[in-house]
Image (cartoon, rainbow, N blue to C red):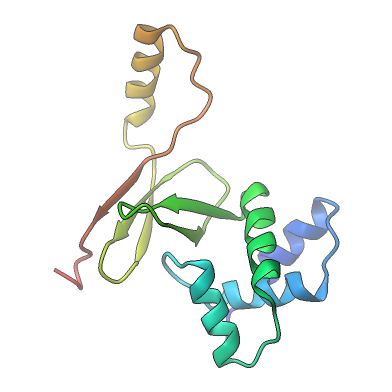
Length: 140
């Protein structure tokens, strides 16, 4: 059974956002994705599947979905960025720099380090991001 766009569709409806045809199309493209991807990857998918959708629409949908916590934007070592579909709970990502496979990892003790940095710096730290890059087991 193919993946469905249901989680994104449900989240949009629950948060009072209209489910327009273009947003549904982007949600359908995301349902088929695993690992990190770029807007260009989604546009390529749309082109191959003959899904009529514009570049600006894809970027606007990615921005909205990211703001809603349905996607996370990852800053790549190259300076480019990609996206991953992920859970809303706080986590970090390990991304393969070869195939873009992405794995979510739990806190693993980082919160205590962040708390200590806040204590030492005097900052009240409200959020943080950690992205680790390397080679997945298949690409090694």
